[in-house]
Image (cartoon, rainbow, N blue to C red; front, top):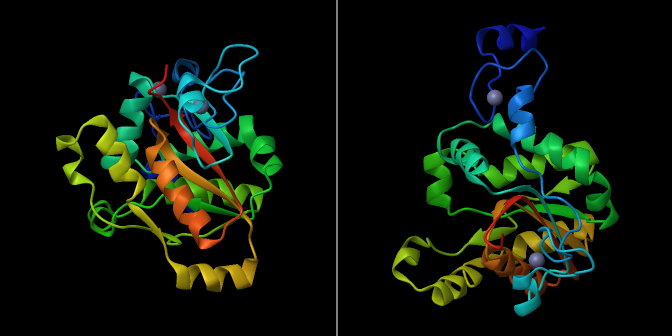
Length: 240
Ligand SMILES: [Zn+2]
Ligand SMILES: [Zn+2]
């Protein structure tokens, strides 16, 4: 009842055009058709679209990644970019409900097929989190984990430093900078490992572009003793 009353005061808004949606709808019908879903076949490593009969996208074929499996849901086009930017920077947390619902509709079997013991959101730096009030990857991981009955462990990974200087670096150094930006909290790992004895982890993030962030997180988890890492990105671009 409280939820109904709240909805009357704060109606849900479309994650694309920001108009008020119909009751119980997460998006307006036209905008639902306008977001581009990544079409199969998918790259085995990152989940981006590849040509028929191809196992990996160009980038995954030319660069070794330590994660072994990947899922991506939406094309990171202009429309998704705006929507994600509202979600991350403008406090539109409700946008996540639509992303999560489409992820589950299309990829529940892919996620559970990987058999992750836990989901781990990609961390943002503490100061960013304090400023923004939330980590968008945690919201996504929790929504997906709750629905699929997979435990979510926040704060297992830590962001070592701010990557503010990224702009001044070339593409290659930028990647290396990100790949070294994460560490696994070993005390937390040991505690969680005893409770859950997990071997497989699925990382969750909002956007996938070069894979450097996922690579950095994967290496930190593998160094701590995790056996296998898969990745789940809501939107993917950069190789299209
Ligand atoms: Zn709309
Ligand atoms: Zn790929």
